[in-house]
Amino acid sequence: MRFWLILSVFCSSGLCFDFFLETIPKTVNWSSDPCEDFYRHVCPIGSVSDPLAKAVNSRRNAKQAASKIDHFKYLAHLAYGGTNGLAQRAGQLYEKRCEQGLDNQNLFSILKTLVVFDGHCYGVFCTDHLKLDTDCKRVGKIIRNTLPAFEGDIQKKRVEKLECLVLAAHNYMTIQEHVDQELEEAIMETNALVGEMKEIVKEMILATPWAANNNVIKSTLGAVLSTNLEVDFEKIKKNLFDQLTKIHLNYEECRNQFNNDNDANILCFWNSIDKHEFDKTYIYFEHYDLSFNAVNSFPNIYFGLPFYFIVKHTEELAAVLGSTGYIVGHELSHTLISSDNFPALTYFSQSAIDCIQKQFNSTCTEFKEESCLVQDVHLDENGADILGFQLAYSVLEKHYGNRLKDTYTPLNVTHQQLFFYSAALTSCEGKKGEVLLNRDRSLNGHSPSNIRINSIAQHPGFKEAFQCSDNSRMMQSATEQCHIYGKDAPVSRRR
Image 1 (cartoon, one colour):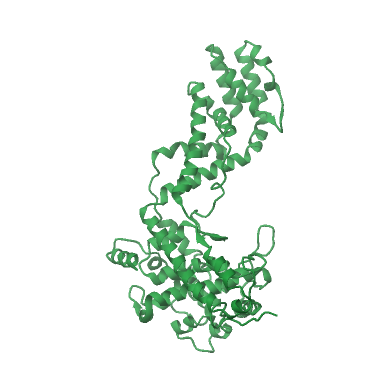
Image 2 (tube, one colour):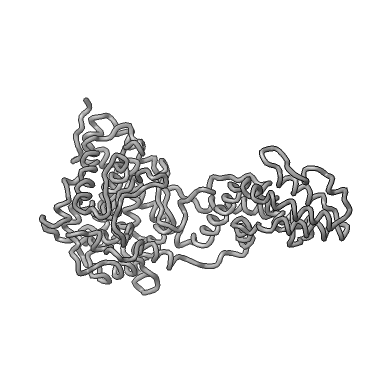
């Protein structure tokens, strides 16, 4: 709690920006009843989609990167398409050097490498006969006229390396520009939150009847206790920096061989790319980007930088627990919900599965907008939504106790209500909810955002927070609360 007390004093002094003080007043339709359609109370049709993400992007640390990465930016620029004109530049470079009586052996060596495809060399650069012609302009013209036929294949052959370079430069600069001491503290707080939830889950598992009756308490505990927040930005940054530096050094070494002539830039770029074998460990590592991205890649869980920005720039803990805390609970819960998509457990209760899907079916029926489905493919995400929310709420109760219904003065809502509002803002969309599809048109595992958020109606805390009547739409859609783990979980005796 010490960190949160310090943060609260700092923000209350007016010295910092608060994401929820910024977004909640702009998005919530205060004239509507939260008990009728909570998601549309917070995120009305036609409102700005992803308001929290937009607030994060508008306020994230945009300080200038250190000058030492300027050359990485230039290399990335070349990779993005700045390599056009290779033939013209190479021809000009050859002519100048030839007329000055300089050796062109390195130039021809690089050109020969560029036209090797699938182990075979093609074209006039494969032999040494051009070197024997002393007419500088004639050979320069041959280079300019011949090389364009290969430029498309030159890029195609190196498309993966180009992608690696662009991503390496992007990822390094993202960390360099946005991960500072305060964000590192936010990461530590998030890691502490993971640990706190794991302790809650541990007690729940030990008290779970179906886990005891099927002798899976130890294996289930082992799975969840093995799940950890994986983040070491210094390690990642060093890996990327070392690779980019090596490419840059190869690039500068090549340019030096041509007396730093700008006509050698593109040629040397391809040469430096060819020489480097990328370590892809953190190249395709998308979990520190600037979007709301989180994933459980068992046994590790990862969160995009915006979730840490929220921790860094949010005054009230209730808002943090409803947003970043809810996502932490969701990702941790993936380990605890066994499905075909995520079979981390050796056994899982069928009664728990039925309860999860029953709630989402009921929410779909009541709040379907454009389209809605509940299929087996949705079980993992649906279960993680329900259990993740329960875990985050348990942490909320632990920290607030009898202060839960106290008013958070800046927004004139209770801490309990603030928790729910911040949860809805994590997936706020101003368009009608619809079934999500993957790129190959198969069903995506996530339910529509309005269904995911409105399914929280089954949690008793929601009814209590907003004093909903039993005949309200939210309460009509609420099924019996799913006790997936804990003493009230299904018995599910072994047959």
